[in-house]
Length: 136
Image (cartoon, rainbow, N blue to C red; front, side, top):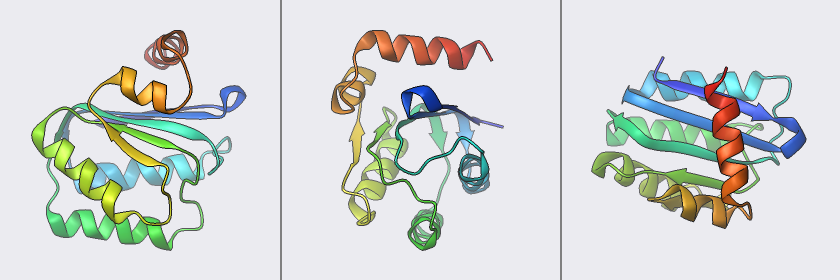
């Protein structure tokens, strides 16, 4: 699966990383896994890292995804930094940011530094969570 995640309960933080080709079903699947995880808390802040993703979603699929999130009681209410660098992933992320009215804390960044600064963390925190994430 091109999407993996880790929940850091002590840090109240969620890291979601996409790599390679990412389709609608991949995004739905990882979202459902996060929501059903025993450590999930909608108030946790998080990063959705699309920097290595090749997003393969249509506009209709994007709208379906947003609708599913809007209708869910488990949707994130904490700050969410989306990191995107490839053109289609960036377009997807910006569209998501603009359409998701229930959480004004959703912001798009092109760098990890910008995202982590927005979340009020520092580079050592970012390095630690990515190291823990990659070691699993």
